[in-house]
Image 1: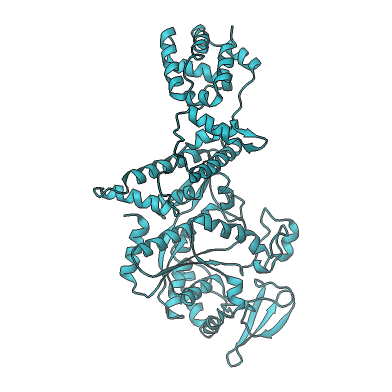
Image 2 (image 1 turned 90 degrees about the vertical axis):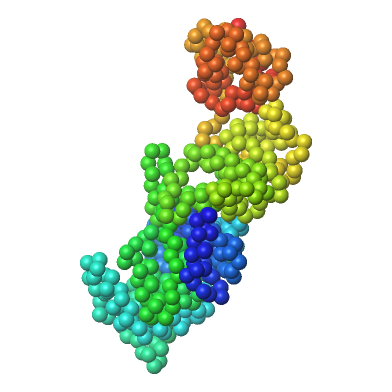
Amino acid sequence: MHWADVIAEKVIKKRDVDKYVVACGITPSGHIHIGNARETLTADAIYKGLLNKGVDAELIFIADTYDPLRKVYPFLPESYAEYVGMPISEIPCPEGCCKSYAEHFLTPFLESLDDLGIELTTYRADENYKKGIYDEKIKIVLENRDKIKNILDEFRKRAKQEPLPEDWYPLNVVCEKCGKLNITKIISYNKEEQTVTYKCSCGHENTVKPFKGRAKLPWRVDWPARWSIFGVVVEPMGKDHAAAGGSYDTGVRIAREVFNYIPPEKVVYEWIQLKVGDVVKPMSSSSGVVFAVKDWEKIAHPEILRYLMLRSKPAKHIDFDLKKIPDLVDNYDNLERFYFENRDRDDLNENDIEKLRMYELSTPRIPEKMPLQVPYRFCSIIAQLAMKDDKLDMDKVFEILKRNNYDLDNITEYDIERLKDRLMMARNWALEYGEKLVIISEEEAKKIYNELDDKQKEWIKYFGEKIKDIEFDALNIHELIYETAKEVGLEPKKAFLASYKILLGKRYGPKLGSFLATLGREFVVKRYGMFK
């Protein structure tokens, strides 16, 4: 059974509710990267697991758009120092393209969710506060100020931290003058008038009703408040929130003792680490170590990202290596083939059934029949050779595929569109993260040819003659390489090496038979026949 179905089953056994609300969220303070997406995709998988069990469920996403800007991040101009402390929903867009700072980073992520096959209800924290959704909770919090302080101080004591000040209030007012909420201090609360008197470091003082967006709960109080507002039953969370004494532990106490609400079941997920060369770094928007979700769409289909996230249990960390995208796509293609070859069988073992479920969870829009598959690495080569005036020459693409023994008689419109996308994505990957395909010049090839041993030179000339007369496709070329190498007494691997040297100037390259078929008869005959 897939881990998402296991979690769904456990939640249903433990909680008897009318609707199983699964929550996830993010603070859009910077580029939303695929590490952030792990939370959303984990929540989506659990949501789909609940639906698979036949219960009523809902997936919600809460964007913490009312959080303050904490500092001038590396990607921001120094001029943004004046906005530090203001809610990010009230700060101008860094590029002037969106209505606010928060929307600038949130919008691309939300737009990607449809492609990822995620259907959810989105809430923005600034709108929630301004609509008054939090007003009743704010009243409860102010009336239970001492109880909340005592709960938090218990955990602070265990962590050997100083207790909160006696005059602390679990609420931050947004200053009417400077617009900041992290430099205001509540002086008093009038329960009868339901007003707070506050003072801001900017010098402004006033007495206000702290409702409809005039104030915001701090995170450790806001989180349990929203659980009770939205009826959250299960929620994935990063290991920092789930650590002993973290915001989940304090949230559990506040939810039960202040809001009289049973806290949601937690699902802890590990970080995704970005591998840059030999260095592995945890992704972080604030430090600039990111690979944005919107950038994923340039290099691979969304179901590949879902597969990357969902093939491992949430508690297992993921090393994301851009160099290995082709391997990831190959693994997904293998899973897809397994699905279509076995989905109608009724004699599968538990492991095989889990594979089918893995494909279903990874692929929200499953095609009707097995689609055309062209390996990602091969697509990166085809796309680089078939570009004409910055556009794919699909006639050339189909010609290359036929020479590589692909049956295109029953190709569908779906196949063509998916192929076009993969070709462009693989090309983007090759140019940015893989290896750009560069065929060396004839002059450079001649120089390299002179450095080869006599047997290799003999084979190149012999192969150059023989290849003129064969049916020019990948299988025939592959067989000819081995036959001619054997006939001149050359080890096949030395024939491959010699070929890569006179074509690419390297000791390695793509599968040679397919590569030569892709290059075309005219080019290959000319290149191998130029050495006299």
